[in-house]
Amino acid sequence: MKAISSSCIHHHLPVAHHRRTNQTFIIRGFQEVATLPKQQSASSRLSQSFSNLLRLHVDTPPRTDFQSSTGISLIDEKHSTPTCSPKEDISNKWSEIHGSCDWDNLLDPLQPWLRREIVKYGEFAQATYDAFDFDSFSEYCGSCRYNQHKLFKELGLEKNGYMVSKYIYAMSHIDVPQWLERSHLLDTWSKDSNWMGYVAVSDDQESRRIGRRDIVVSWRGTVAPSEWYEDFQRKLEPVGSGEAKVEHGFLSIYTSKRESSRYNKSSASDQVMKEVTRLVQLYKQRGEQVSLTITGHSLGGALALLNAYEAATSLPGLPISVISFGSPRVGNIAFRDELHQLGVKTLRVVVKQDIVPRMPGLVFNESLQKFDDITGTLKWVYTHVGAELKLDVQSSPYLKRGFNLPGFHSLETYLHLIDGFHSKTSTFREDARRDIALVNKACDMLVDELRIPRAWYQFANKGLVRNAHGRWVKQVRDPEDIPSPARETHHQAFSVEMLATDEGLALTLC
Image (cartoon, one colour):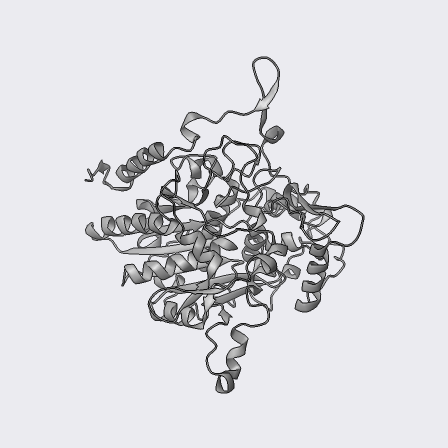
C-alpha cells in the first residue's frame, strides 16, 4: 500500500483529482473545497446524486443565540470547564457496557458511562489521524510522526490510562484508491507500507476502574467519501472455512505482505494477532480477566471487523467487542452471522448524513432479506453487523446545515455528536464537555457565530523551521521518531517491561 498524498498534514481527506472530466475537484488543506470553473465535476454530480438518492436535507442554518440566561456567553462558560467528564468506576458493569446484552436499553437514551467509553475509543481512532504524516513532500510520508513510547503523550491521551505496545503496518497487492499514493520523493522511509494503527493495553489504574485488562487495537482510515462508490465496489472474497465473504480490497489491505518490504514481511493480520495473542497470554498467566476492544473509523472500521473475526477464531472465549465510526459494509450475510456465532459484539456509530456507512451495497444490501422467501439467501449481498447508534448533524446547534460530505464523515464530527447525544427525542446536551473547536480541526462544520477557523489544525509554519543560516527548511525529525524496524522492536521490549509491572517490580520475559 502506498503512502497517502496530500499537500497538507494531519488530514484524512487528501487532494482528490477526479480523472474523468476537464474540471478538477479538489479537497484542499483540511477539507476546503475549490473548483476550477469549467463544468460541473463528476465528483460534484456524484455528491448531488447521493444527496438526492439518500434524501439528505440541506437546510439553511438558523441563526443561533449562544447567550445564557445570565447574559454570559455559553461558549465562555464552556471554556472554564474541563473537556471530559469525571471517570466513573465501571468495574461491575464493563461486560454490559461492552455489549454482553447487545447494548439493549443502553443506546436510547444513551447510558452516560457508555457514552464516555465510546468517546474514549473514538479518541484512540482519532489518534491514528493526528499522528500520521500526510505530507507528500516528506521522506517519512505514510509513517507515524512519533515513536510508540511517546504517542499518547504527544497527543494528550495519557489521561486515558493506556500504553502503546506495538505499531501496525499495512500494504496492498491490489490497485488502491488515489488517496493511498506514495511520497513525491524517491528516497523515502518505505516504498510499500503505511502506518495503519497500533495495539495498546490499559495500565493498572485504568484496569481497576474498568474491571479487566483491556487490550485495544486501533485502525486508521483514510478516505474521501466521494471516492467510496467508485473505488470499493469490488468483488466479495471468501474468508474462513464457511460461506462468509468479505470485500476484496479490505481483505487485501489486511492480509498483504511482501518479503522484500521493510515493514510488511508479515501482514497487518500477522502483526496484530501476534501481539494480541502475546498480551492475552501474559495477563491470563497473571490471573487477570482480559478483553479485546477493536476500534476504527471509515476504512479502519472495516479492518476492525476483519481483525475481530480472526481474533474470535484464534482466541475462543476471549471477550471481543468492536466500536466503529462511519464504517462501510464489509461482508455478506454469512460473515455477519459467523461473527455473531463467534460472540463478537459490534457497535456501529453512524451519522445519518454520512454516505460511507451506506457502502458498498448502496442498493443491494441487507434490506433484501425480506425477499428471502422468494430469492433464497443472497450470498453476494453486503450487510452491516451488530447494533447501530445513529446520530444526526441537525441535532447540534453548533453545526452548519449545508451539504458537506467531508464534514459529515469527519471523526471529530462523530465525537462531537456522541458527546451531545442523549436520546432521539431530546435536544443536544447542554452539559456536553468535549471541546467544540475540535470539530473544525480538519473541516468547516461549525457555525460562523462561534468564530472558529476552518481546518485550523496543522503544524506551525506547515512543518518548516528556520535553520542556523536563517533559511526555511523541512524540520528534521528527532532520531527516536524516525521509522526503524530495529528501533520499534526495542521500544516494544521496553513496553513489555513496563506492562509486566507487578507492584512496581518489572517481570523478566523470555
